[in-house]
Amino acid sequence: MTGHSIPDPASVEENGRTYLGYREGRYLLPNDGAEQDRLDLQHKVWRLLLDDALHLAPWRDEKDTQKEADDDVFHVLDIGTGTGIWPIELARANPAARVVGTGLSLIQPPPDKVSPNCRFVREDSEEDEWVHEVQFDYIHMRAM
Image (cartoon, rainbow, N blue to C red):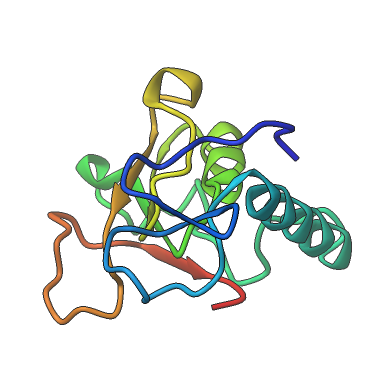
C-alpha cells in the first residue's frame, strides 16, 4: 500500500468521500485515500494468490529470435489501472517494456515518481474509440 492518497483534480466530494468527476457515475466507488488503500491491498492479495507473480498468461520470451531487431520494445496495456501499482511494478521488473495504465481517475503517482517506461492515461475503456497509437503485445485487466 502506498500509505498516502493521490487526489484526482476532477473529483467531487459527497458525504465526506471523493468520487470520480470525469464521466461522473461511471465508477460508483470513491477514489479517495481509503479506496486507494483498498485497491493496493487488493493488489497484494492477488500477488499472494499468484505466488508473487504479476501475471500468469504467457509472456514474450526475451530471446525470441522470430522478433525483428527493430521490434524489441514490448508494449503493455493495463486497463482499469486503479492506483497504478501493477504497471509500476511490471515496468520496474521489465525495463524493455513500455507500460501504459489507463483508468477513469488519475490517482497514480506523477511521472517523476515512476520508471520512465511507465505512464498513465485517463480514458474510458468502454468507449468505442481506440486512443492509443501503438498495438499492444500484452493486455492486462483484473477485477473489472
